[in-house]
Image: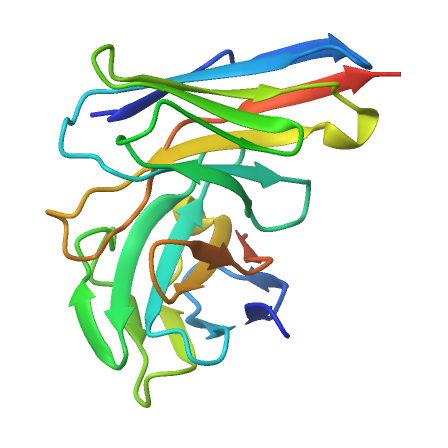
Length: 111
Length: 114
């Protein structure tokens, strides 16, 4: 079956632009996670959904970051007024139980 | 605060050798410890995972050793191959955290020389 897919794979944004990153989880997976991975570092948690409910957004670095999963499947991570420090790979993962399966990520470069 | 410390940062092993990567944790509430493999330009892929009720788990050439009293766990890659060259991350999560988010180590870049 299909794994987690993310789009776009690469995004270049000028500082101050808004961006939207999409995640299609594995079908039937209740849980969905967003992580941020800086170059040469391990992924860091941003936010978590159980179905359509956002149960944990403690990792979102600022109020410029917003995530939604309105129908409990596809999720969008939105970053408003992008800054250079937002440049990173944004990873989405989905799970049914313990095991989290990651997508290929979206590499965001803010110039 | 880094809750999962991983070492070494990089590792070079000859083909056929054993690669060993170590992780230490502080939070005794952690109860799930996965290892992920990541190739450049790809997302992390789950390799193997363990819970604290066992001291060792083996899947093919990959083995996790777990030492609950020392709060340490390690990944052993037997008969290492050039195709194993990648970055490896340990991680942990705990049931008291309702999100079951993973806390990752900083990664180990493994190079297996032919």
